[in-house]
Image (cartoon, rainbow, N blue to C red; front, side, top):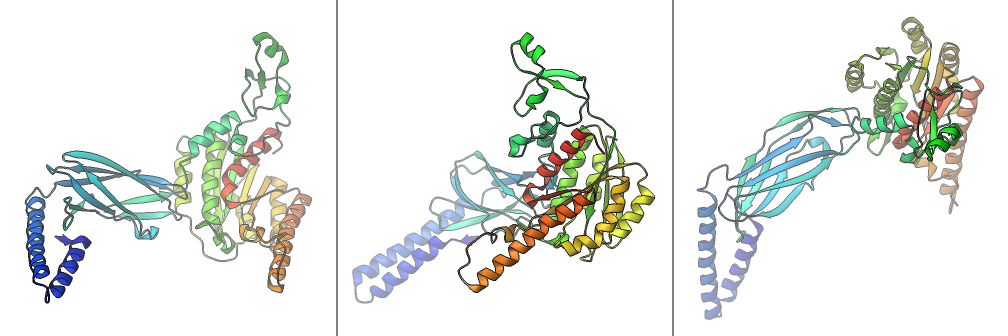
Length: 438
């Protein structure tokens, strides 16, 4: 049994009436009657709430067996009221402590013998095991003086894996080359075969240069040529787990953004007929998943990505180069997810990146500093702001200089915001594949 705030408020008013009634007999009599009525109402609530079945209120939690990291995951609560009267409910779902949510309280009124469904979402920002506890439901009548607590639901654990919720969406966009519908640039189709593999209806985003005018005239609607891309090439996602990848954006580290993007690009590459593999490294070469088009390859990659952690140390690109020479025999596309804070940091690794670029096509993916971007170009109002603006512009210039230095060494690059990483990497992969030059 739990006493609600309403009871304390009523008791406070009655006590004040008793105090004021010391000099007023009528007010004292009113206070006595009010106290008697309050006791009767409390007893009534106890009688109607507690003798009932201990499962008079039931609540069941329903969610996915796996959470998708960085995405909104939906949780559904199924409520059942077996009381023969309406009840007021307060529901507290004991979610994992890591979310630090203090506002997850539902209040509602349920009719007798009724069912209700509640939904909410949770956004994890870290991979691992998340433990749900019981669901607490506090029931009271419309009087609202006393409430009864029900402990319902079953405690269980949910594993949080790299983001997989939008894989189906990426599949649709990649197979139809419609990534620009998500707010991205169109992909140039370069170096295709002269003879089309098939002819299809034009859809928004198709390159106007591949319109088949003869077929368009015959069908009286736009038709485009579809060219067969080269298949069964090797695509490797190479993830740097060094200290620079621990910078955070919207609660998630750059490492986790890279892990989510690697899972997505592996999925899209397999849809496009390529073999996908995975490499991770920090001070030493860590994980290697050989490239494959096997139906279970995505499971292997997902499990490998799930267990990735950092040692907060400087990454060793020499170790990566040596191990790649040992384990990667065939030419492929290396998507290297890393983060260079300065030109000097890139210069230390440029030698090894250049050596890898002689045997493979290398795309270095690194990140914009979103916090510094807001400082670039602003009008400073004091010396401190002027200093911050100059530093921000210098760092932004160094990012552009890194791109220039990489291009000089025949190394492709992609500078992106963390929240746009996945879609931009997929766009870049499709652009490289369309050129057919790796």
